[in-house]
Length: 332
Image 1 (tube, rainbow, N blue to C red):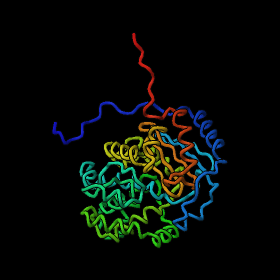
Image 2 (cartoon, rainbow, N blue to C red; image 1 turned 90 degrees about the vertical axis):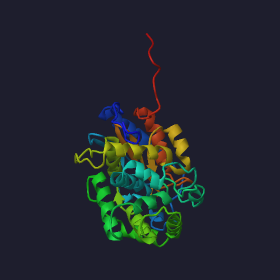
Image 3 (cartoon, one colour; image 1 turned 135 degrees about the vertical axis):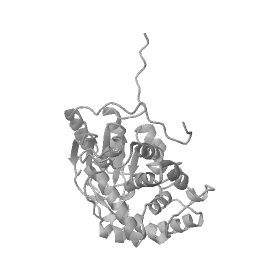
Image 4 (cartoon, helix red, strand yellow; image 1 turned 120 degrees about the vertical axis):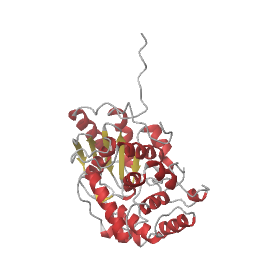
């Protein structure tokens, strides 16, 4: 076998989520346990996000067969923000191949905040990973297209296929972010200086900002996550959105970098690939089983939903999701 090729997996994640009544009971318990949590603050550095209701709180669990269990404001729409990043990375992997995508973008965790300039400057090759802002802007620049409109069309259609429905852009959020986007613009120009941006910097930032303003609900995110959990097949539409090999690579980066500088603590406590966004969404994926999405706008200092993290610490072991839990082997 060519050493650069990806072997066909002989063994994959197995098992299923618990039965519907147990899932419903646990999701409702998580909601009741944390609905009064008052920690965190809104992302007020983006004026439109500072308008969010801090009491909004929803949870959705979806399995790879498309069964969804919702509580609270799980159907309320909000801008996807950084939870878009793994899905755009998946589209890039499909377009270029996972190896080329990793070479151009990097896949190592930075251990620094999501908008860090230092994280990029510390690496001699100018890469980071596609789940922090610099790497995500670079990923967007790799989406096929001729000009901003064409590239944006490919991004929106790709994420809509993950969601199983047509996603719309919140123009109010887009305009608010675009008016306060100087740091991302700076990152894009630095990327170009390192040879790590693959289209015009202003075009890349425009499309990236629009992708972050796509409107989703926790239910949408759970189904998008269940698509990655189920080998790239959307659980309701049955469409093969991306390949199983792409899902494997995306989930690996989510596990190591999805919650920025808190990613190590997240993996230690929750044991699952995850991704957060500054509008209050967190998506958590159990390979082979399904996904959990939460929506709660108040954030911690790293930009991660406070209630969302509490929910996942509660649900991970109770739903049998943590990838690192094992039982003692029986010895005959």
